[in-house]
Length: 339
Ligand code: AHM
Ligand code: MG
Image 1 (cartoon, rainbow, N blue to C red):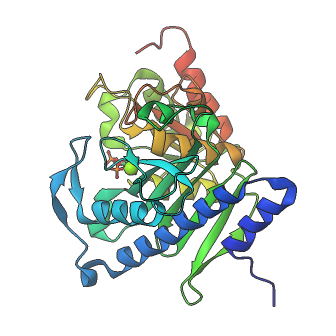
Image 2 (cartoon, rainbow, N blue to C red):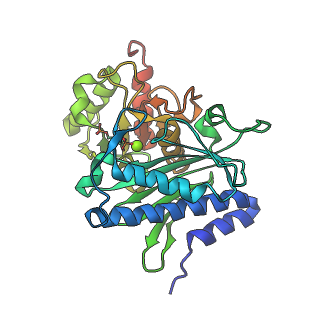
């Protein structure tokens, strides 16, 4: 029988081998994984647990919250606030940062999350997920403020997501490649199922919400038009399209078999840089994709190099198979393509 490596063992080994991660970070990641298990249980129960449907509230982005958005947010806060490894948390579902209450010890890490990504899929039983990003509080800062969170994605010390689909899979990087862990429900633990995940540099699959086509900028329209032209067009090959409307599930497919994902800026709300949020969606996903040999840009610039100016900042996202992302980025940088 091949030996099973649990997430706990994987993290302990990461800590021991060359001290790749400190003990505090290991503890933090274990707690996040435990919270994801709890969220997975709630997702699985669905109507039986009375967790589906809309809550009577909106989040800071003006989006109507689903009951599971709120439940997942609470699960992550309650799991993480008492362990002593965190200074503060930030979430898509909370306007300001959440300080660890005074009654608990304070740690040096900052945890950001989208507790339940792909909310529009909750009630229709389609894959959804939790996305998380871990930063270190800047050296020498006293107390903790929103400013401490405003670090470029390149400074993340861990990032990952948990996808709640036919299987519950936790995908993680601590800067040493990407590993995937499948939840073994009988054992109650995440088991390592893939290591050194690599995204093929080329692909024939793209993911974008095509209903927004008329609002896109020229470079994005050009790229998709060329894909749609198939064998007879300039790309000389047929493309396939997938759009799950859960970034976690779309990124999971790309980490599994390649592809390109785009949620670009568009003319519907030109003052917004995009729909997705930089700090707890694009940064963690961008780092995972880069760690798997792919690329992630906002069409012009590497996502991980963007210096954020606010917690809920939005960003245009192009990520996945390296050669395709480079092509879209090149189209944006060509003279005359400015939005
Ligand atoms: P959410 O965090 O409120 O769920 O929104 C983010 C989601 C992404 O998971 C997904 O890629 C996108 O929104 C889908 O948007 P659309 O409904 O425009 O297709
Ligand atoms: Mg989201």
